[in-house]
Image (cartoon, rainbow, N blue to C red; front, side):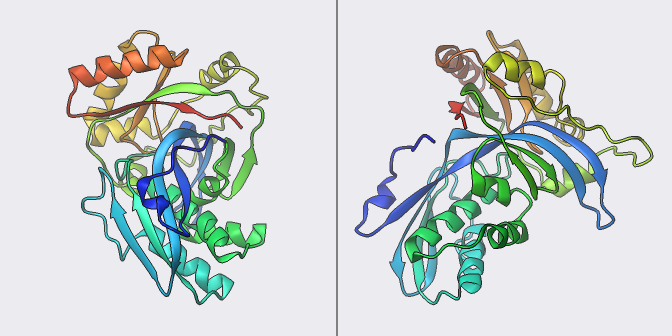
Length: 301
């Protein structure tokens, strides 16, 4: 897995660091709804090289500092990072603390699993810092308690996700894909998107086709052409800006596929190479200077 450059916050003595890569839902099908109201999903999930960073150093208690372009408005006391840290300490019976630092580079509530990725990075990081490892089944249970997207973010590897996030099929091989991420600077809570979903339980579920062995970008694009993100329509009804982003991406030169990630508002475009992705980023950013636009790559298995 690619390791991003170490953030400045992680250079202190005895500090460890962990990347929290952006989670991208390349496809998302709704296949059912449980009695408790949770929707059942099938989603092809991959991770971009760009994301947040977390660092930790030994301390007497658990604390969190937040910096970065999207630190504003985030609580350092009521945060998924601190919740994950305290939950892990309780499960492990750990009395030591940790001074945590989150570098927040991803827009909040953007459909890229930022909070879930941060919580997952916390679980990975503190097990290293404290020298203790949870068994796989206990780690999955703890991750699910923190959020439906946390288990796949703990794995931080391409996966086909089923159920509410607990059923993961890690995928290999998986191609590296140049991708452009675009967020128009708006967000809506995920529960609002699901409430707006026109899901009819009397209809047969609409599962995605079984993922094959993705040996090339062409394999991936062919499979993705048979899928969709079924949260797109309700998201556009609540946030018409998402539809505009998708129109812009679709019309951008060399874009092979444009789609919304997760529950939005971030959308992505897949491009044939890094050069065309960077060119698309410049074009979109110049025309829409208030948007958040990043060219990166989905890393392979």
